[in-house]
Length: 172
Image 1 (cartoon, rainbow, N blue to C red):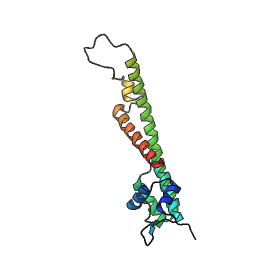
Image 2: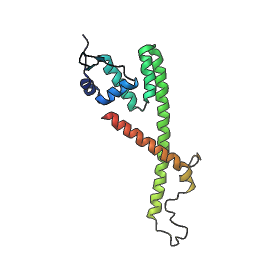
Image 3: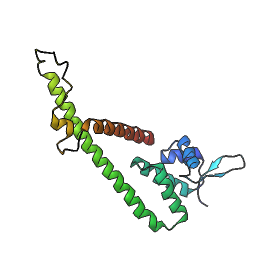
Image 4: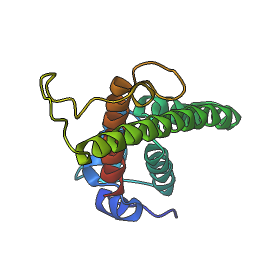
């Protein structure tokens, strides 16, 4: 007879909080659990494996919307279709991360330039106002000529912080 887990046991076994497990059921990423007469959720071993799959995918940055379609394919369709779809999603995520890394390198260059400017002696003439946060064209536009980097770097930093918070949330 397969082992049946309560939600707390499933949470402990997977490292996913009970609240998140209930949420995954609510949004359709995890199939609803069977219930006891008293209303307690009961999870079979396949739910444990599914939840571990979801956790790993979320750690890699895959969206719940993408996971919902993938898990639906696991439930209803031929499993052979899941692997190519998953490969495409992971490749997209890898490309996005590579772009974020590039943007963050540019942002680092901008910050380093501002630090150097702030460490240099201030000009005697301040008639043009404080120019200590200005950057030269190479740092402001990036060496590859992609255009203003400030907005990209700010957006990239927000994405990186969001991804970091999501990674931390999933790790808890």
